[in-house]
Image 1: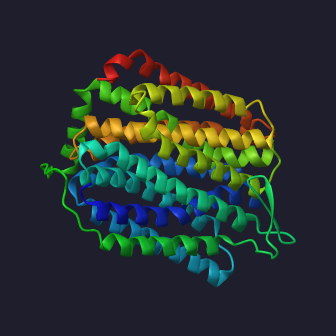
Image 2: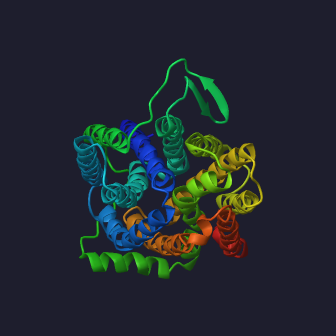
Length: 420
């Protein structure tokens, strides 16, 4: 495989920075839900940040197609590290972090996600030839989810600490023989900052030759955005597939950041150990999808597999609304990990085969803007106090399940045209 060393460094850098990001992004929603007892404030902040990323996402798409992907990674890692280190320093100096700075960290991480992942996949496409697209996207998923397993385990320990040397992980009592104190937010943010800086150093050593020489569009931002929109307008099947298959991630992000803490705290009446353990089960499912997707594709094509995974996601989300069993909740998290990660691998592979690398950023930006608009609507809806009362969060899960089902219908209808 061409650029094998460059890909290895890219995967490692992504895994290292993703580890502490995962811990921080679990800690912040849990902090608002349990420490501040104000999930509504988090929901409002999450909706506002998500809406603001609409404009950033379009701009990111033009950056990904215009500038070297390595340079974008370097700048985003450096910026993330500086912001997290500054906020953590404030926490150490004052022994607490103002809520506005906690929101700043969440917003900065969300904005970083919007440039990081389009760049990651575009860089992966740039480094490889077509026959390796699915393998590369699978490797990205495997490395990312392996890191998420570790992040979830560490978060479970750091968010709740241990009591009498005993810790509950994945529903199993673990006797550690010593106590680990609960970490403060500024401790977690400092850990996050350090991984950004490590990733920055690793990316510096990446050397590569593009797998295919394509012309770089050097027009102004407006014309570059229009080029991406025009490409999709002329290819309606790509537009339909790109959006409908992406809607599963609309629900995933809303569920992880907004609904999951409420579900665990208000519906299951469990603590941080169950909350973080569910993330581990999700990551284990995603890890299995990363290993198994290439094997699955010997028997079924991408479009059929995505439809099947969306229907399974519909089932488990609706099932979540009708259960209050922790073991079943863990099983549901595991299945959602399989369906979401599997869909992501297959979706990105399909798009790589249908969109040139010098347009992948801008077309992805269009998909992402639509994704953000939908996500903002759901976040605003589920931030209504009704969903934070008692077990009412289960209604949100039911609504999410119906939305995924509706999104699968166009893929089912146009299946034969999409399989070309």
